[in-house]
Length: 157
Image (cartoon, rainbow, N blue to C red; front, top):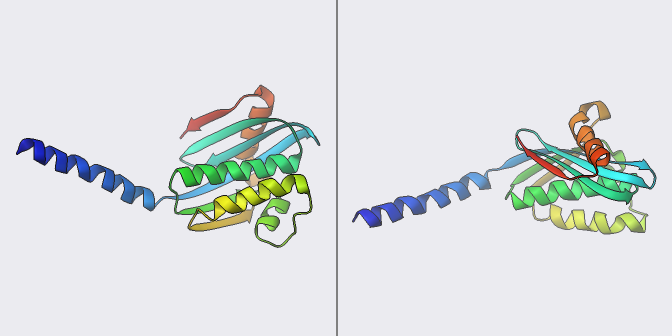
């Protein structure tokens, strides 16, 4: 009888975890940069209270880095079973292209744009907003750290 009670108690925990995960709402501050255009490139993604991601990209354009930051944030959200994601980006171009206000004319960026749209479809509630650079300092710092060190890092808050 005790073994059965333990199994029943143990089986409730995964269900409780899944229920908690389903309610997950995240905010992501993203930034991508390059030193030269193209040049050394990196991204920063900050999920306040959750994680900080810095990734070195090698040589790339600023727009390539901005879109790479967006795709990284989207993947993290999907893998976390996020139900609602609000992205803040200081790239007005990326924000307006994702919202459908601007066309994507650069074929090199088209692949990342299409990838972003496919990831967005996997998030039940998604929004993206433009934020001024001074309100995106943590993501900028992470992108610069990636370019300075030429390394990737993840820090959990």
